[in-house]
Amino acid sequence: MVVFERPIGAGPDTKELEYISAIHQTGTRVRPNGSIKDEDIQLYLKSRFGIVVTLEQVRSTILHGFAGGDEGTLDATEVIDMMELTAIILIPLLLKMSIVEGDGKTLPEGVLPPPDNLLKDVIEMIVHDSGAFAFPTKDGDVLVTVELIKNIFFIYGEPDMANDVDLIREMIDACEDEIIEDGQPAFTPRSFGRALTRDVTLFNLTNETRASTIIEDVFGGAREEKPTPCDYHDAPQSAVVEAVNKGHDINDIKFIYTAPAIDVQAGTYRSKLLIVTLWGSVMFLLLRLALGSSPPNGCEKLYVPQGSVAQNLPGIGCDVEFSVINWLIRFAIFCSCGLFLIGMGGLGNYVGNTRWYLSLIGMISAFFVGWNDWLPIPYLFYLPDKDDPYYHLNMYISVITGILGSFAMYCHL
Image (cartoon, rainbow, N blue to C red; front, side, top):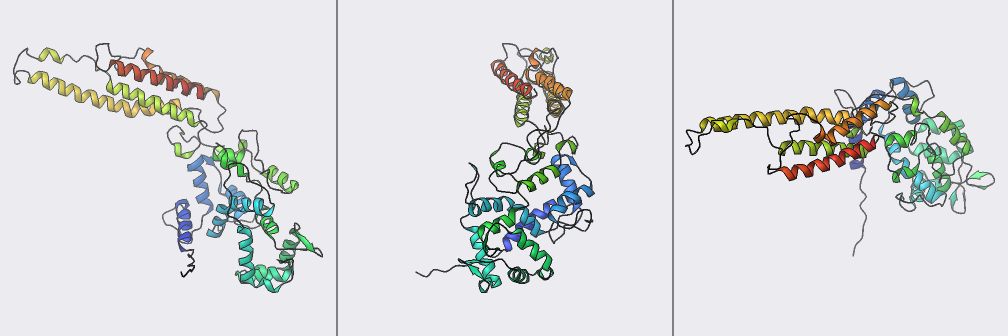
């Protein structure tokens, strides 16, 4: 049997990255280079999370962290390109590799493990591509020297960095985890993993297993909390403390109202259970309205007892006319009343809410939705009598609506 390997090119992966960039881009034309600008990030944060930031804030925080450059010197030309977008996507995987393969530790329970020996395989690729096997080694590991890093930079198309000797020496000085030969660090999975993840230690891998929102993952579970680093990564405490202190507090972020009870995709709601129970109670309420009896219309007076169809045409026409008007009214109630009740019942259900009266209004609205049978409102919630064929079904739906409404009230507490 003949066995061969056919490598799959990066073309499909590149197209996927271009698609991710395209759906984040704004404006009338899509930039084919896959770049993401400051205004794209500004509009994304506003539409997705209701966070209002200026272009300068985007440049000094997000773009400064990923696009590079000295703090305060970034301008409107700085973008996140496809290489940096790939790095963002790979951050969780890099941290897992550094912890498992580099430090020899186990991941938190429930976190998906990385592929085996991935750091080792990448090191072998770099060594093969750059000809690093010709450089000094110790116990099979290539020693990190100025000439080695220069050669790697040249091979991968970074001549400017290859000629920056000061930068290379700083890189070697920072590689202090695997010193094995006369003060010389080695190119090992441990040192490589540390180099890849030293600046992303605030990313907590346990976020994968938490039932939390993205905003809680970034700013902490409560307004007074700050993000905490992953306890499974041996990061220098000084660097961690500096990063935490430099981070932004959720109280410093300006939010706008995003109607979380309606636009659930935005993910700015405080309680998902409140949205589910509120929508359920409103839908059961409207279903009961659709199945409920209609008020007397007086059309029975137009029928002739034992009369022909022609004689009863006025009564038939009255019933048809009343039925059409009745369902048009109910349809209008579905659209307006349903939207109103969901909007009012969802007041206060957004991240960072500190206004107690919004939650109180939402609780009162949820009570109105769940227990409307005890409210004397004519026609809108017309109660059927016991002779109605849908009486028992209506009562059953009323009980379900009340239970869901009670849960929605409880979620506002």
